[in-house]
Image (cartoon, rainbow, N blue to C red; front, side, top):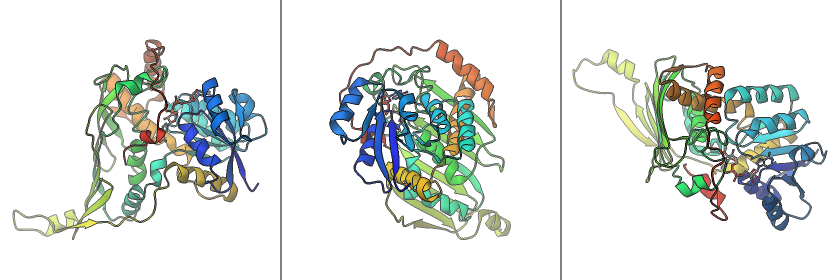
Length: 389
Ligand SMILES: NC(=O)c1ccc[n+]([C@@H]2O[C@H](COP(=O)([O-])OP(=O)(O)OC[C@H]3O[C@@H](n4cnc5c(N)ncnc54)[C@H](O)[C@@H]3O)[C@@H](O)[C@H]2O)c1
């Protein structure tokens, strides 16, 4: 194979991926087909995409057509694992949109199918292409921060108005979406948080507020506290109801502190590690000498195209994936744990009690107002959804 024939399933955000592929910008891949259940989306695809792109309304038929080698799945979240499993079982390479799914039990099943298939399986964690977070990950892995002690992420610039929530029947309902800001907007940060540090908490206590700022049944405001095996702690704060919002990610280790904010990475670097200073210092008041460094950040941020190009390269040349699909379960575990802690009004130990989460989610789905009235807001500029760098 010298060119991967890609089918895109779901044409909201998926339209943007379809256009990227149709533009010829992805080396070694081309858009062969799209599939959407909505006749209006099919029509839009017919009018705006190249005429040789086949338009499908039936996902199963496209998957078994033999006319594609790979898919990008950009349906609402619940369907990601279900459609991915079907594709993998048909021998297709799969790139799913984030989040990996809504609950980890379902995602675990998808991961098993991916492993059994031997196909390339990736997830659209496009923010892993951001050189700021790549640099942070590299500095931590190289030991520049020493032992991690504290992580604080305030990610409150995912502003969403009521009209956004009203624009899609599936949005912000337990039955349709399976959560709010944790499952839709913040999965990027829930991924980066553990990807950059290589650390998952041992337990989480969270406080989610449901419909605090908007008329929705799911969470739109979250404060979570996490504890780690090595004694480190973290606070994660997110909301869609605040303006102006903040995006500040701070990681402190025993050799200093790194802050990512306003597109910059600042390293407050201790001359000697804090424990060493403490052992030697006899002067009463005083603290370790510290140098503030603006760390130069090199390289472009290819955003979503970077993940799609990497997916094609992995299929054609075995290039290692930036965001292996199997890793989607980590961020989702954090999100599920935050819901569960709120629902049980208690600490949640990891590994997560996945059966209990599933059971409590089902209770909410049973009482969900999934069939809400949709108010059309016209054409939407999907680039506005990326937000928050
Ligand atoms: N990575 C990012 O930056 C990013 C940005 C936006 C959305 N997303 C993700 O993309 C996914 C879709 O979100 P959206 O905002 O585009 O939603 P959307 O409602 O705008 O679009 C979803 C589309 O999928 C279609 N669809 C639903 N079920 C289908 C099925 N079984 N087969 C074929 N088509 C189907 C719908 O008709 C609709 O056109 C979500 O999981 C979301 O988290 C990711």
